[in-house]
Length: 105
Image: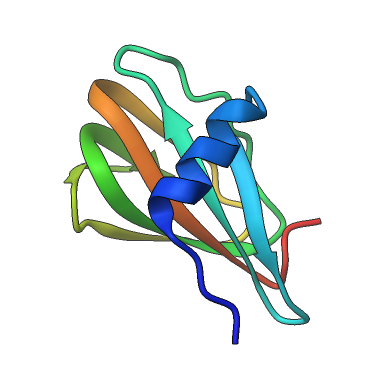
């Protein structure tokens, strides 16, 4: 079994001065923690993997392809591989768990 505590993952992510911390990588998926500050720009470009976002905290909008929706704690968003997507209008610091399948390369 592998078990994680979000507070410890957040501390590790912050200590490494990065917006993203991959904390689990297996044959068919990888999981990470992504953080963006209120007002910050999201620099993402399309990925070659399907991905699922679970918003842990914060408020923002996300655009996936031509569709835009608002997200907050508890929101789940699926992004198909190769589709342009971006968080924007980040009103509160955003913390998101990200699942890639297959694992992010």
